[in-house]
Image 1 (cartoon, helix red, strand yellow):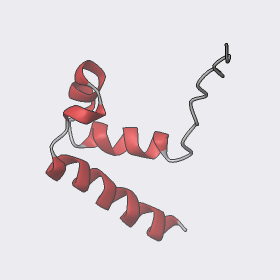
Image 2: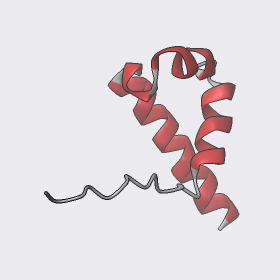
Image 3: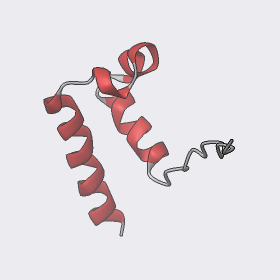
Image 4: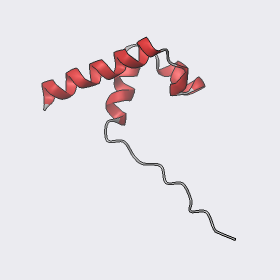
Length: 59
């Protein structure tokens, strides 16, 4: 029988920025209780857009 390798969760270096923006938009509680998949496309896109803006400004 083939042994399964344990799943390794990759650590996203942008995770702190994503969480910070989600908190600013008031979405952190929803994410903690229901997960990232509970966000609408509009909310997720807003987070992604703001992340891109900040990365360009800081980078």
